[in-house]
Length: 297
Ligand code: HMG
Ligand code: MG
Image 1 (cartoon, protein in one colour):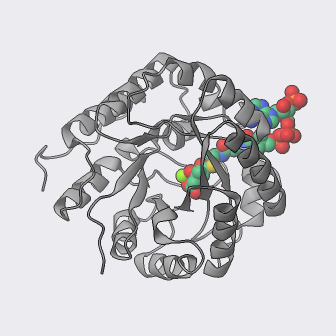
Image 2 (cartoon, rainbow, N blue to C red):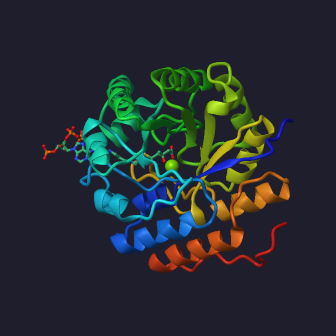
């Protein structure tokens, strides 16, 4: 086992979290949420997505939101972009980093972005080309890597081939998403061992939804293989409206707690993170996640 000494957390709550809420949160509350997250020590906060407002009305305020948040020095604020139209709108508000996304599942791809996997790769290639001209960094996501709501299990070989394609197209990091939270630790290990034959360790991240309570165990399995980047969402918000059954992401609070207990540095202040989680939970009309102690393990 080669646990990393330090882990970069990619906070996806403002995007993955709020895209899946029935309630549309006012822009000024989202701004306050992101501004609070910026004060926690997180270095990456995925702020919103420039997808079609017909598909994700919850994030239709993307441009105003992005322009209005306080950008803290040293923190990056990537946004999700599905196509050139999204990228152009993101460029208009001076986005510095985007995330593109596809999936090894044809059926999920069709449901989520209304095209085939091949078409999605062609679109991504064009998006990356324009992004690079504007010196915008590009992260890549693969969804449903451990199971698809429509097609069932995914072959690790298929995931590895697509990850390699994203890597070769110029994604600086590829996040492997268990979108519906069906994976278990040994499956994660097998998947990563296969993907690692195609993409070097330092370019890979993991993204677990917590449908069956496996997310932290899956993260542990990924850390044991040396993974250094983990996506998570404060208060465990999250889900994809086009992936039936998808539950929230692993909670950032729980991830930080786990990593602290393992002596792995994150730079994140748990107390401030819990406060940001309480803030957004109240705005959503939820009972904030209660934690017995603010002390680190
Ligand atoms: P489409 O309907 O096929 O698009 O949607 P189209 O190209 O046929 O255009 C139709 C209309 O949409 C046109 O307008 C376009 O201009 C407009 P009209 O001429 O009818 O007035 N349009 C746009 N408007 C605003 N922004 C845009 C845009 N693009 C086209 N970017 C599309 C195709 C990809 C746009 C749509 O399917 C879409 O937005 N899908 C996104 C769905 C989504 O956001 N899903 C959740 C994120 S993925 C996720 O959560 C997984 C992840 O967390 C990892 C994991 O957990 O696995 C990342
Ligand atoms: Mg997700």
